[in-house]
Image (tube, rainbow, N blue to C red; front, side, top):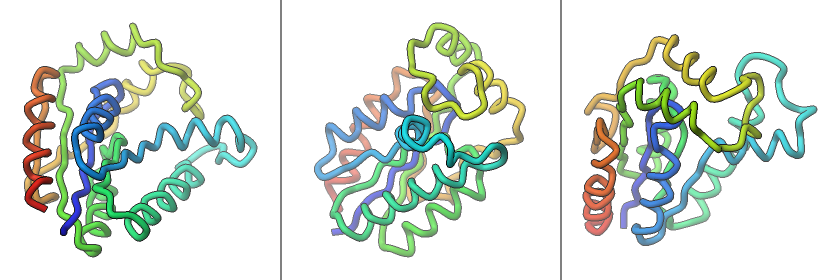
Length: 182
């Protein structure tokens, strides 16, 4: 049986975590790996070890350890719920999964910026994941200002593009059907 890796791609408050949890609940044998959980863990227990600036290498190390464990020690489909906005980062992660026999799915959350701004101003989400940002609007503005290359069909075996939040249930159903043929 071949396994799937499902990678979410999108800006803050685009619905990646909600989607990942819903997908996990309908797939047989699936696990969500969400870097926000790792950031919150570090900020709660190992704040002194966080890098002051630059990439959060501690968070990435924890995520990699969990991903490697899930790949090597489980039979789960893996749902990576992160922003994954960097093309070279996505490519490297997916190549590792392809090398280990996984088929890949990218779910791109391509929602209008006005909707995302509305969501971040109304959010009740914990800020315990932050290392340097003061709020989610700042995170969104940083993401808007970075050059981003949207996912393309050549990056994964399957690519889904969500432009409307109402499309998520249909895409979850399609991914469930793909998983049933593994």
